[in-house]
Image (cartoon, rainbow, N blue to C red; front, side, top):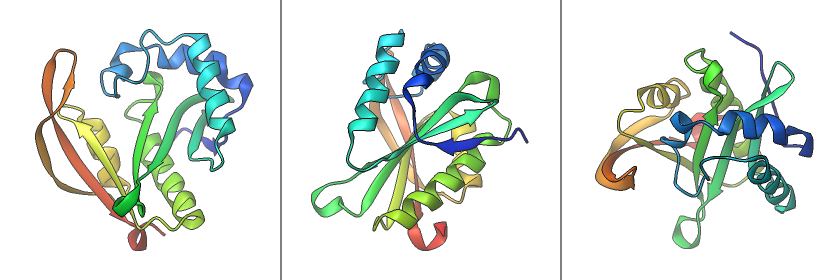
Amino acid sequence: MIPFILRQWQESDAPALAKYLNNKKIWDNCRDCLPYPYTSQDAAAFIQYIKSQEVQNNYCIEINAEAAGNISFDRGTDVESFNAEIGYWIAEPYWNKGIMTQALRQAVSDYCSQTDVVRIFAKVYAGNFASMRALEKAGFRKTGIQHKACFKNGQFLDCHCFELLKEYAL
């Protein structure tokens, strides 16, 4: 497997972030709040935003001394405050190499050890089988399918739901 490092984002990562995230294949599997095309200004704004957060919940995936992906945790509120949604992407040259599975394991373990979250969940668009496999290999279990739960690229998509309880993550 190609070695990687999980670390915090740095301003110097903006060029690599813009290079890799300006990819419609990645955007097609992310929420629409992610801009496309993705510019260097978008990258700089993202890094500035996450560095200003009180709790760091984004992990940069560094491969070959370059930022090449992200794993984020979005903490729930109110009665779901002990839950966090995980989101992630990795640069296309590193797809299907087992990196994301290992990165997910490390990020989940680190995040769980630093927070009181008891459940991490993910929603994956139908057809993104590599992402589903990465979650399952990282210990997540599929809990079901939400039919026509998302509207992306002019069509309704089913969302495959996964979860991992903290006691199984550490």
